[in-house]
Amino acid sequence: MHCNVLNAKWYESLSLGKNREKRYHLAQMKILVTGAAGTIGTRLCEVLRQEGAEVIGVDRGPTKWPAVDSVSHRADLRYMDQVMSLPADADIIVHLAANARVHELVQHPEKALENLITVFNILEFARQKGIKKIIFSSSRETYGNTGKKSYTEDMVRIENCESPYTASKIAGEALVESYGRCYDIDFVILRFSNVYGMYDRSVRVVPNFFRQARANEPMTVYGQNKCLDFTYIDDAVTGIRAAIEKFDGAKNDVYNIACGKGTTLMHLAERIKELTGSSSSIEAVDSRRGEITRYVANIRKARRVLGYIPKVPFEEGIVKTVEWYKANT
Image (cartoon, rainbow, N blue to C red):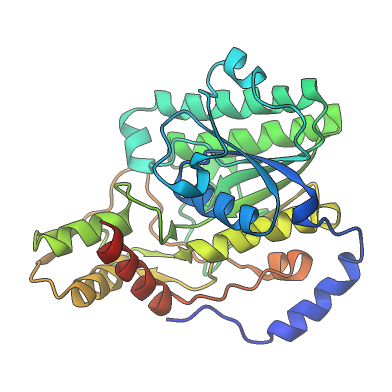
C-alpha cells in the first residue's frame, strides 16, 4: 500500500506556473504555531527551527518535548485575554490547536464549541494585531460518509456533517473565509487525514494499537472494512511548510494534505501486531457513531499548487512509527 508518487515530475511542472509568485524563506520569518505541544505542532516547530525560522509556540498544556519547550507560551485560547497577551509581531499564524478526537467530541460535544471559540479568538487576535496571514488546520472529517472513491476539495457539504467535531471544522473554515473577505486576512486551509508518527502519545488509533499490542491485550477495530488515508507526520509537516513558503501563490484556498492511498484499520492492526511480535487478538466491531468509514484524498491540487508530494508510504511510515514508540515509550 504505497502513496501514489507516479508522474511526480509532471505534477511539479504543472505547479511552476502558479508558483512563480514570491516565495517566503523560513529563515526570515517569525511564525506563531498554536497547538505547539501536539503531534503535528511539535514536529512542525522542530522542523521550522531547524530551517532557521523564529517560532512562537502556543499551547494550554505543558510541553513534553525539547523541540517546543524553549519557545513555548502557555495560553488557553478559549480566553481572549490570554490570546491577546501573545506576541503580536508574527508574520504568519499556523492554527493547529483543537480538540481532535471525533469519538470524544460525540461524547462531549461542548468540546466542539471550544474549537470554534479558539478559531474565532485567533482570528480576532490576527485582525486586531494586524497579522495578515493564517494557515488553518482542518480535517478529512468535513467530507462525511458519501461513498466516493476519493475526495477533492469541492466535495464538502453541510448535509454530510457526521459529528460535532466535523461541524467545528466546517464552521472554522467558514469563519476563516469570512475574515478573509471582511478583514483582508489571507488564509490557507489544509485538510489533514489521520496524521501518525513520532510525538503522538495520545489515544488515537495508531498509538493505542501499539500500546495494546505491546501489552498483548486485545485490539479492537471499529469497522471491519473501515479504510482511511494515513499521513506520516513528516509529510503533514511538508504540506504546512509548502503552504508557508508558497503562501502568495496558494492563498485563499483549500488543500488536501494526505498520502492519497487508503489503508484498512484491520491491516493497520495486523501490521502493528506483526511489528511488535504481539500475541494480541484482533476483534472487529461496528464503527462508532459519527466516524468516517472510508476516506482517500485526492491530492492533485496540493501537488499542482504547493508542489506537495508525500514521500513516506504507509508500509514505511508504520515501521518508522513503531520503531519510534519502542525507543521513546
